[in-house]
Amino acid sequence: MFERIGNSWALVKASAAVLRSDKELVIYPIISAIALLMVSAAFFLPLNSIGFFDGAQDPGVFEIGVVFAFYLVQYFVMIFANSALVGAALIRLRGGDPTVGDGFGIAKSHLGSILGYAAIAATVGMILKFLSQAGQSEGKGNPLALIGVLASSLVGMAWSLATFLAVPVLVTEDLGPMEAIKRSSQLLRKTWGEQIVGGLSIGLVFGLLAIFAIILGALAFVFVADTMPAAAVAIVVLLVLVFLTLALISSTLSGIYSAAVYNYAVSGGSGEFFREDLIKSAFRSKGRI
Image (cartoon, rainbow, N blue to C red; front, top):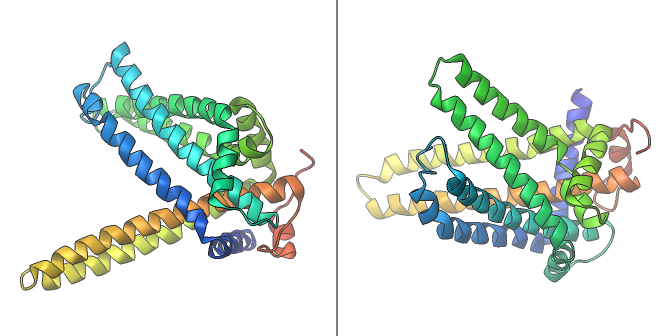
């Protein structure tokens, strides 16, 4: 078990090496973040008018339509940017030298599949939201509330695992969204241990870094808040910038990691950034797919 965790962490570090060799890859999450802010701003008034932020219950057809449109646009932006990132990362992993335009070109060439996948993801996202809200509406201590929360968590986890490699499949195998999800699940069964632990490793590392930054920032803020208000404001701004930077790097590494997992799962090639012995020991095939 510990060997598998160690191999997975080594794969995460190799993904970071890919980013160091091609720093332009971080541009895709930056553009995605800016676009998502614009989408949120555009939908703020419609969502607020239907009680979306207040957790309003028993939505009608109009309310469901507005929420679905919001989720659809959000997921489309995220999946499009992630497709560009994964496409560019795969070029790098296979010995090429991608430009930012190459990544976006790959994403644009699969626009229909990305839109279809976004529609499926938006539907799942709405189901998870309604399950969560249904549980919350029952109140704490109510068994139905616990069932709603557990159902939302289990469905969300199953969806995340089943679609871990859906984006790499979409941008390389010319499949539709449903076929890409099925293909992702097949590859998941082949290399599930490394995917789960690797993803957790990225989240864990950056989560710990964020906690460390909060502790340091809080101590510094308390120390200067009364005597140097300007310095206190600067600390808050710096913390925000640190969080944004950590989020962007974490998102970029996650995209690179999924590309690396997919690349080996389908070709058996380790590439220049991954030791062949590491890859062979980390991925234990359960048979041809």
